[in-house]
Image (cartoon, rainbow, N blue to C red; front, side):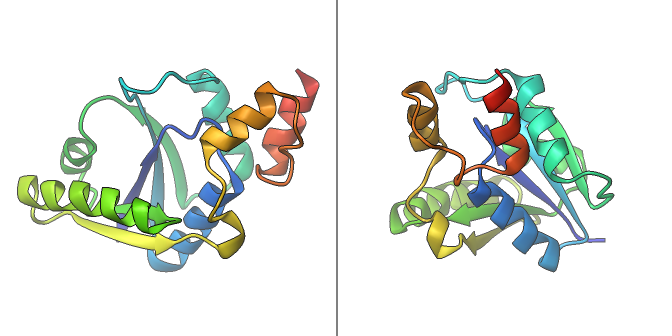
Length: 156
């Protein structure tokens, strides 16, 4: 069984993230969406809210699991018998950043492979940071996040 970890803060989970998971499901038997704690990032939304949004995007899909973790992504993979790290690329800057991490991960755990998937063209210019700014300043964020996220944010 090919299992891949898709790590991120997912603050919030976007249509771009959804696109990467759907593409990953064409490649892997299981995708573990892993919400990591990043000491350099202050999140806008709490962990339970982010987990709920992701669960709502994949109701009753046994091939998608949502977890949270702390520490190095590569260690989580090694400790949980996960052979692949799935990463989405929007820009050449993403590639350069992800390539550096992949090289270090390969050095630390040579049996765990990084797999890069290009985001859909319509998601290439939109990041969670941009979406958080739209939310903060009451801009229209609805076309950038899954319906479950939009509904939940509009209620609050």
